[in-house]
Image 1 (spheres, helix red, strand yellow):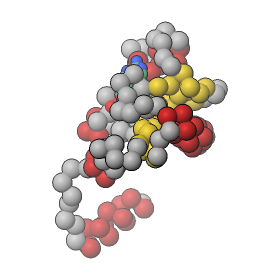
Image 2 (image 1 turned 135 degrees about the vertical axis):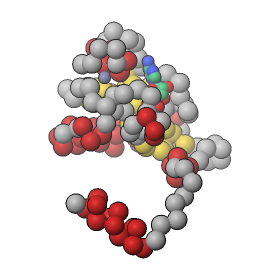
Image 3 (image 1 turned 90 degrees about the vertical axis):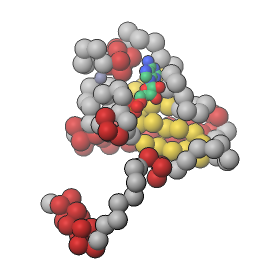
Image 4 (image 1 turned 180 degrees about the horizontal axis):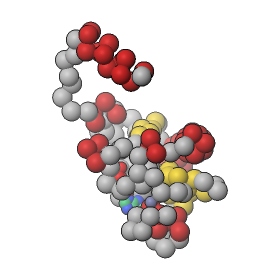
Length: 139
Ligand code: AMP
Ligand code: ZN
């Protein structure tokens, strides 16, 4: 638990939340400022800021909860689809520094955008640049 982390305080029961799912390692609750009805946050119980900080078992448990909850969230609000995503780091829009997966129900013609809309201006990359980036990621 991290002092003054709002999501750690929710896990500890010190701040109220509308809990929708809980296991030994994972917790899920409704977003307090939802982008759509049913907007749910799925988090690891232990404090970690970035996805890269999660060990493989915990990442697996977290994603298992996401896959289980996404259709349940959609069913609960009669959604047509959902966006599932993580703001990982401040530049990506992360405001709460505790890993959380957003499950955002989507509806036909709801006026929202696909996840592609989160990027900035599209870069114009040459084949050589793409090859170099792929090689760096592959390691
Ligand atoms: P992010 O910008 O990805 O860090 O998203 C943080 C999310 O946490 C936002 O969608 C907020 O509405 C939500 N949030 C902040 N405080 C609370 C809270 N006490 N209970 C539920 N959701 C919260
Ligand atoms: Zn925390």
